[in-house]
Amino acid sequence: MRCYEQSYFAMYSSCVPTTQTEFAQTQSLMQTPPPKRPLYMQPTMLVLLSLGFAGGIPLEMAMSIMPTWASAAKWSVVDIGLIALARLPYTCKVLWAPLSDHCSIIGLRWMGRRRSWLFVTQLICLGLIVALALNMDNRGGMMSPNAIIVLLGVLVFAGATQDIVGDAYRAEVLQPREFGAGASMWVTGARFASLFAGAGVLIVAGRLGESPNTAPWAWAIAVCALAAVSLVGMLGIFLGREPARPVGQAPGFAASITQPFQIFASQWGWKLVALFFFLILYRLPDVLGGAMTSPLLVQGLGYSTETIGWVRQSLGSGLSIAGTIVGGLMIARWSLTRCLWIAGILAAVSNVGFWILASTYGATVAHIAPASAPVTSLVVVLSIESVCGGLATCAFVAFMMSICDVRATATQYALLTSVMAIGNTFIGVLSGWMLKNLDYQSFYALSIVAAAPGLLLIPFLRRNMVSNASAVE
Image 1 (cartoon, rainbow, N blue to C red):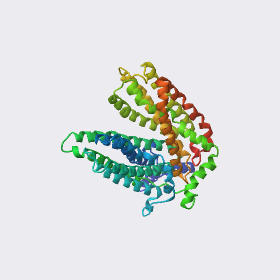
Image 2 (image 1 turned 120 degrees about the vertical axis):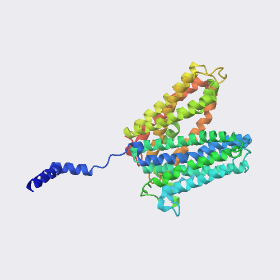
Image 3 (image 1 turned 90 degrees about the horizontal axis):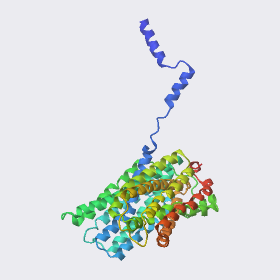
Image 4 (image 1 turned 60 degrees about the vertical axis):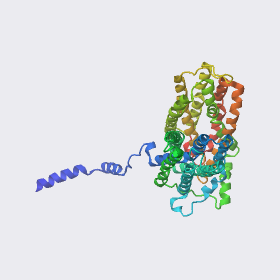
């Protein structure tokens, strides 16, 4: 019996700490939290991926699917041109953004302010996509073009509202070091939406249109399938967590409209002008270069549309996603200021490839190339441009998230994107005139130098990171 007690005591004493140091070490091990998941595998990141996917579908309906279907349905060019009017809500969404900052959806307050808005807007988008799908066939549709354009406009309005709330949700649910990764996942989801909606629907509709049995409803089937896939956004809403509602919001709806602008004015002062110019100028190399890339590749260098589709849309989209992922990791590791410098410089340098193509193969506006340039050159140039563009997009979105005050995230972010969109539209219109007068070589040389004004404004913005100043060093 004594031998048993001794052996038991020896075994027990070997497992129990006998000194204060050993006891403290044991307590430390017991209290150590489990290791965090990798940045891109955290549940919030996967939720943002699904929300970005669902949020990208309404815009793709207006930009890609409906114009293509209307062309196949033999609409007049005037009616097809009117489809562009349906995209207007994305450029003026700041006008109703304060509503989502101030109000929750009645009857859904248990979901929280942000998630209730996301749920309702996604539900409306889903219903409108199905309604449009059921009016699409190879005979031109069951409704008049004007009625379909109005229905599409309502869809885009709901999609723009979903975009407002989604941008605010993304900025509020993340920590500053996660802004880059969150922006990356959102952009990646939108890219997947572009592939599913812009390429997948067209391919499925084309295949179904080859069979006499499915041809009359080819587009309807393809678009309804897209609506079903968009339900992944609903899953993200219910799996995601609601961000805490900030204190200090202005009481009353009228005050909620003025407060976001008052916050910007008080925190930025005269530098608000520098901020707005930065929003327009930082992506200037991409805006200028991107607007005239298709004319350069098709008319100036003689590439076929099929070649451009495979290289630019397939390979380019994948590498752009890779660029945003790398950007998210960089922002988590370094300061946002440093990442803005690196991404802006690389975005400008990536246009050097187009300048080399235009110079080497003699691309001119006046004469269409008699033979196409080598495909390998196109692959190299577009690969570099896609990665750098994804990196710049990630840094830019993370920057806009970092300067929004949590008391008015939706309104302030909508204002920032509206300023950016208006500037990009104006510059895009001027790009054709500039190319006509400069030709390809000088135009792309100018697009490289055009990065300087945006980069030189970064030091003026550094001090004014509002509620998330720790994201920038």
